[in-house]
Image 1 (spheres, one colour):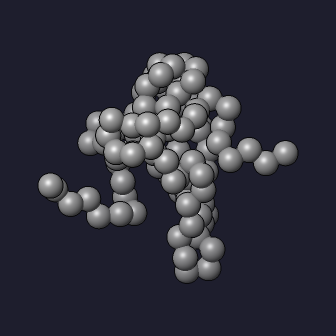
Image 2 (image 1 turned 90 degrees about the vertical axis):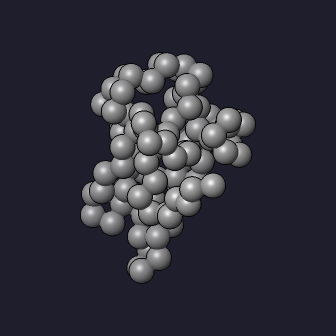
Length: 96
């Protein structure tokens, strides 16, 4: 059965921006969260997981690549209720 998000996260309102990914259980450092993006030909596509994480300069996730796919992995222990963040690498960040 297809699940758009892993069972350890949910989407809800974010104080960072709009909606964000939040842990619904503790997530240990080193846990693979899932695929966030992939290339379909020349086009970069987001998965539901990739659509909802927010940017942080002090992230708790890192993105890594396997072939044409990008995955998210916890780089810190993440507590239940904490927002999952990653440093954006595909998009420009403009200062306000």
